[in-house]
Image (cartoon, rainbow over the protein chains, first blue to last red):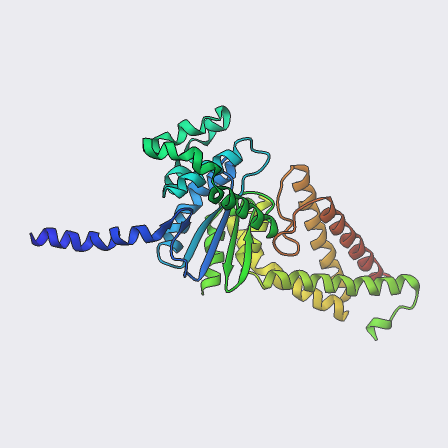
Length: 197
Length: 143
């Protein structure tokens, strides 16, 4: 019994904290000193690389400890034939609280659906049958369309020219991180540490 | 009087270009020093010519070197050394930019802080600065 109580004492704070740390396409504490916005396109190979290699480290080192609030922004590029559709689908999944699962599976299988365009089938494993039925209506909904249009407009206004672009905001100043150097976590960490020191 | 040492049109032009180059180096240093050094490291790393340790060294040191060069050029102190150093530095920048353009790399120039995309405009700008610097250097070595 004591063992069970001890186990619950350890597990309860974790399970209670989990819903507060993931809000659709945003992760962490909104009151964190640093805001990280990632302008991303699900069909962009660089975005997949950034999502797979850098984001887990950013989450571990800065989001989980409450130093940064990470927000993924939808920024589908016209050059990517399924860019917009994938953004709409993931945004619809985010309305159902499944942003992370949808984004993960799309990035993991990017090379497949980028060829055959089978996005609905790709996302099927992360949705229940009931959720799958809601997706078409959600895609057409104002909340999904406004969310994507809003992110694209914000990116354009901020001078985002390509993906992935990482915008770091600290004390009301924005620091754009772009280019090949973005794939070396060493520079991201050094930038964030420099701001936080 | 260093600033008024040459009254020929070429001498006056060299003086104007030297001061202009100095101000440009001061501006380039300022925009880099006001950002976290690693942001400049990212720009350098994008060129893919240096190992990470060298990227860090250059990212930390170059803005201060540009600042020193800017001060020397504006003040007209150690003119031969500062003009030659500026020409060599700009030649290296120009060479790296030509290489990146030839390879079709879509990267930031890194010249004046983030968001300055490498293009024919940036190449032309750096080429003009290099030509100006070479002119100032050559004038400085005239007897």
